[in-house]
Amino acid sequence: MTKATMKKSADFDLRHAVVFWNERHADGKALRTKVPRESFVDWKAPKNRHDPVKTVLASNKGRLSQFVPLRMGRMAASPFAFLRGAASVMAGDLFAGPSTGIDVIMDGDAHVNNFGLYGTPQRDIIFDLNDFDEATLGPWEWDLKRLVASVNVAARQNGMNRKERKAAVMDCVDGYRINAARLQSFGVLDTWYLHAYPGRTNPVVNIDPKARAAIDKCVAKAKRTDNHALLAKITERQGHGAVRFREDPPILTKVGKATREAVIDGLNRYASTLSRDRRYMLARYQVIDVCHRIVGVGSVGTRAYLVLLFGNDDGDPLFLQVKEAIAPAHAPYLPALPAEFRDNGKRVVMGQRSLQASSDVMLGHTQIGDRDFFVRQMKNLKASIPVEWLTGSAFNFYARACGTILARAHARTGDVARIAGYCGNSSVLDEALAQWAESYGDQTESDHAAFVDAIHRGDVEADLSQSDSD
Image 1 (spheres, rainbow, N blue to C red):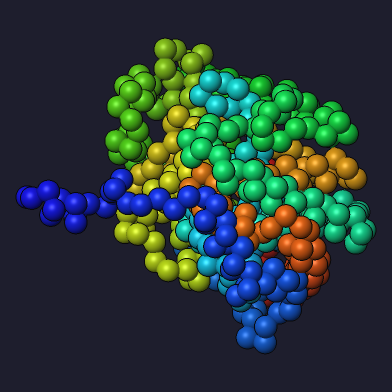
Image 2: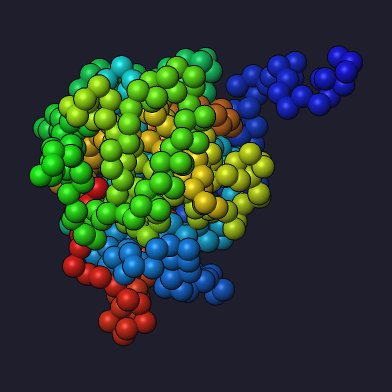
């Protein structure tokens, strides 16, 4: 093969010309004439909008039927819970709106409860995005719109009035916009080094004094949330001395021998997606037990297994979550992904590694039967900020922090200079998205009411006895 042929056939070529950030900023600014920032102001359901209840029911296809009523019950709990579970509804609504055409690796489900604390490989606690089931390639503003919609709906749930909701959303967009402007001229590698350490002065986001008590409490909880704590919480030692999962149906249930063996075979295949050094480490563990464990709202009904492994002895536990990865909610509205990412497990892993400042050392993917899965640690110094506890400046701080982190996530692989050029230095986009979020908050409440009515009519089977738990 000649050098010319090699160059032509290569998927990756560092000979390509790089356009500097200031030129890309100008290009983003010019885009405002085609897609004015003010065009984001209004949300009005189009006449051909898909019925939200039917859309939610369609999203149950392929899930474990015995758990679908639990998913429906969790979504019925509140408008915010409905928003969390109805990513497929919002995907269609976002597609109906204006688009800048600037694509990024997007989270796809960047609502406020999908940010939180977790541990780095160095065992530091950082704040970041922490759910990537819907990750894909798409418009940056779809992530930001889902985030501001969640800010508005969560603020309603916390008793905040319309003026307070507007202020919170504007803080969120301002955080995104200012951080995008800051990062556009950063060195590419420097952007990848950025982490948000709660409790420290850092270059990403600093803690509001009124939010410090809640966040300090969550950091302390995260430090206690590890494999040893989970071992004590959800396992028991049986009469013959073996350690096994303690059943807690429907949240935690045993699996049959065939499923157990299929999951272990899947883990054996998953090992090949880890780097060689981590494969050596994983090989020192043995699978002790396998169960099915339900988490979250939108994921309920997908196949999600929890595996207990022991290393040096039964005081050296490792919990791996083996979670089914299904097609992202935005897939019907976006071009097909590159062939390598049509494996949904690999797609989720790609999204997490691209958007997070530091990813789980055990992150990988596999297949079980004809279904795609991703694998990660179940408890990795994780904790969630209790958004329901926050009001006033503390809530606004959290909204701003999420917007700031989202901009940093997009800057890692997207053209943040074009995004910053489009967003600008004024509050035009902040105002526009605050109005849009208020209208979409109304829509979410209406959709939730229709969903609850469908349950009461018997059109949707729902188990209302279980609350969300992770």
